[in-house]
Image 1 (cartoon, helix red, strand yellow):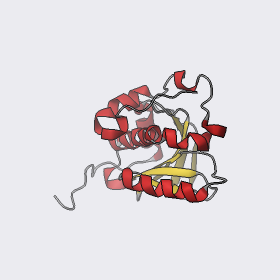
Image 2 (image 1 turned 60 degrees about the vertical axis):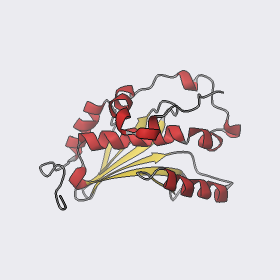
Image 3 (image 1 turned 120 degrees about the vertical axis):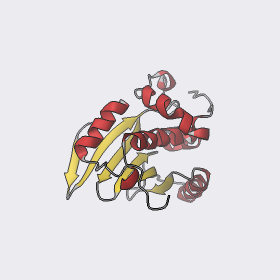
Image 4 (image 1 turned 135 degrees about the vertical axis):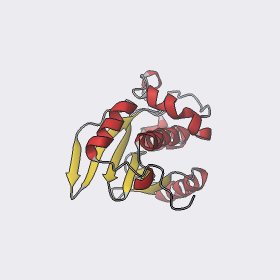
Length: 183
């Protein structure tokens, strides 16, 4: 029904979001607050991509954004990288790809305040991890010189396995088998 909100009683606060992160098995770390907006730096592991740097930003009046830093700043090959990001914007309709002010390619998932709850936050976090997994092969060259994956990378434990498992059935092609990581 138009105009109906999913969770009209939920008014997300920083403490609420930290509780949701605990329930989702994601370590929130310290939070930064300014003018009513709160941010956390998180680290997520996908099934292929490990140590994905994510920033979670909460503006209670607007909603939340989950921002994944896909790679360090792009120094060369910007034109090709921009084409890749534009293609991904088409291929992954629930994520937005862009380049941050410092040149880092990012993927973002937004959650309007009317839908913001533990379930939607968890789905957004799992989505950015899934997207990072799906684009892993194409970003290897952005992450490491020559695209060579460091020894032991693929065998590191996944710190947020429960999160990935909980939302796998709702991520469609993002959880389809991806190529194994070889050094």
